[in-house]
Amino acid sequence: MNRADVQGDTGPLGGGSLLDEIGSDAPAPREKRRGVAARAVGGIGRVLRMSPIEMVHSAAGAVAARPRVSGVIAAAILAAGGVGAWLALRIEPPPDYETERLDVLFEYTLLTDDFNRLPVEERIALLGQLIERLKAMGTNDSLLLAMFASSIMGEMRAQLEENLSRLAVDVADQYAADYDPNVPEGEREAYLEDAFVDMQRMFAVFDPDLATRDREEMLEDGRRQARRDLNRFERGRVGAGEVIRIFDIMNNKVGAHMSGHERVRVQTMFRDMTEMLRREP
Image 1 (tube, helix red, strand yellow):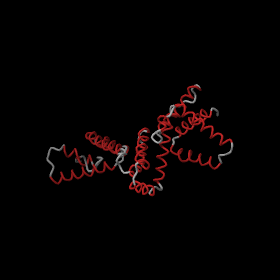
Image 2: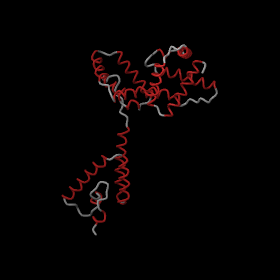
Image 3: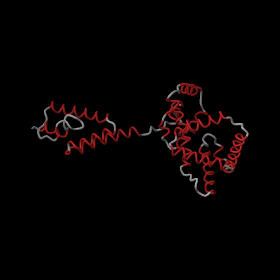
Image 4: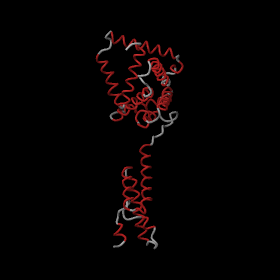
């Protein structure tokens, strides 16, 4: 039985081991070297087309089949898998919000999941820059935005809803994740007041007055609005259809992008925050 019969074609790249050829004492004929090179190129192509999981399985097969060379082959496969995973998980960096075309900015902001993967503060800051660009918008920009808006449909519309909902959820959950409804009442109320004021100030990019408004003034405005809303319900000025639409938006639009834990945390915090502002359950 010769060497080829013993080893066979078991390597993950197929056609025998390239390292066996390299380790041979006798120089390989030109045709044989060409065959080795062709198998190497083809094998590399097959490795790069594998998913990361397939690469790990292939590396494991290499360890079992050829202990002498498996370390080199496995390392190469796992390295390629790492590159593939990095390409799949990396975040596309945002465009320049000061110089890029508005339609490109709107597409990145509203229609890509890369925007959702940025930190909350960075997303809000980019939205602020986008608003400043809109304030200085010229005729050409208006045409670009009109064309952009007319193209939003189907999956693009679903992505737009997700991006807007995801930002609202992430902002709220930053505070809900640290909220403990079981602490003493004074501590709970202080936390809810701070969260109410801080969340408004996070969006000062949309309304610059929020950045400088007095804390107590903001809380008093919130209390007045909460009492007005309660009075509308008590006097029957909010119809059943309006209530259904509100719950549909919160549960099936915004809520659809919450995990179960996020839903419980955010609903609990906003329930208690509403009671705190109304001064009653």
